[in-house]
Image (tube, rainbow, N blue to C red; front, side, top):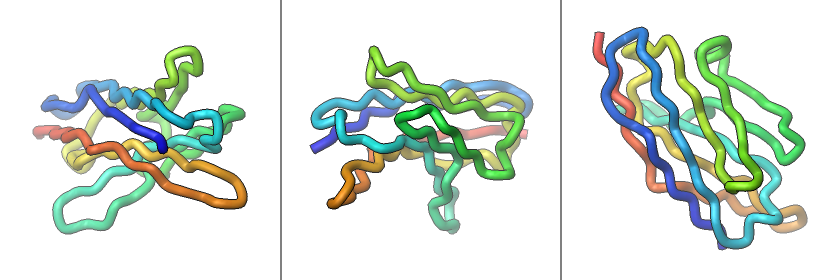
Length: 118
């Protein structure tokens, strides 16, 4: 079992910045990658950014150049630095952990709301 606890969401004006944090606990040694997803009202959940255990990163085209994902292995925490926020970034942001090898499990955090006003 892996537990994910997110923090750092909130309200910000367009052009502002926020940093999300996701602290992992439990059976974290088998986590292959962690990522951030988001879901806006009426839309499907989509990948925002991910980072592997080897620190390879991947970003959605819509956030490239504005968002940065990073990890602090000593704190078992993944961060999402969001700059130049736009109203279309408004969504619930979820932390995800891709766990396991022969058996793969996706773990999710509870979600944190990000609201960007124009």
